[in-house]
Length: 321
Ligand code: ADP
Ligand code: MG
Image (cartoon, rainbow, N blue to C red):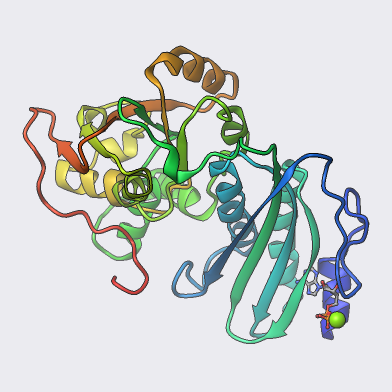
């Protein structure tokens, strides 16, 4: 199978929203009148972001999911994406699974594949997504204000639990491992929640490198600090029973610094509490209040007895891991 057969067979579909899709030198998109384009790129590298043994359909899902998560964090609506793919070989069974997982998630969000590049090489997937957002309504990292509540969607720490098992640092198996593994390999981008938070949240980010590290990005950009009690790590909608079963220090690591969660971390004025609970419950996504933005800079994390937790939580940094 040659390069062009491969593209035609696995990645070319009739264009819908795009004026011109896969097959020419460029794709053409007509942006909706008055909308801004939100654009983001994320790359997945074998051995770095996933294991060679991962199910290709889950990999197709994840490659797009991590990109949709960035659109979600900005409150943008997905429109289209491009796919740059380096493959060691053209394996039809692998490509079938990969493209199935990819298109299933793409179709669920009305996000169309409009082009890309395909080359032979070590397995590497790079996707660029395009979304739409009304001017001035994108949720950004710099807009947190003192007094804001800090919220997180979904649950944290599950992907890290799976990683710790694969690293041999933690022993769980059976259904517990499978649930954690699904969260690691098939994250759910909070696309609808992100859009619903326009004009409600002040600042937002998606949790990809770990909660505290990603919160740090909001604090730095916004020129504020934060205070976080950790009673919610002892039991709340943000912690699954599987993660709750971990001993406290490991649980703190997974929840506060786990990474690969792809949940939304956002700040919002106190007066929007009820509204946030209502919109999240409409979307059937749990949301949990985990702290408060302070005018004083720095991040203060307290244990459930109100004592400061001073140990370091390493957030994921590719050049400092
Ligand atoms: P060019 O040489 O002009 O850059 P290519 O020969 O690389 O174009 O690609 C041919 C067409 O196939 C282009 O429209 C490109 O966007 C598309 N394409 C290539 N790889 C992929 C892929 N993995 N997924 C979707 N479209 C792809
Ligand atoms: Mg060309």
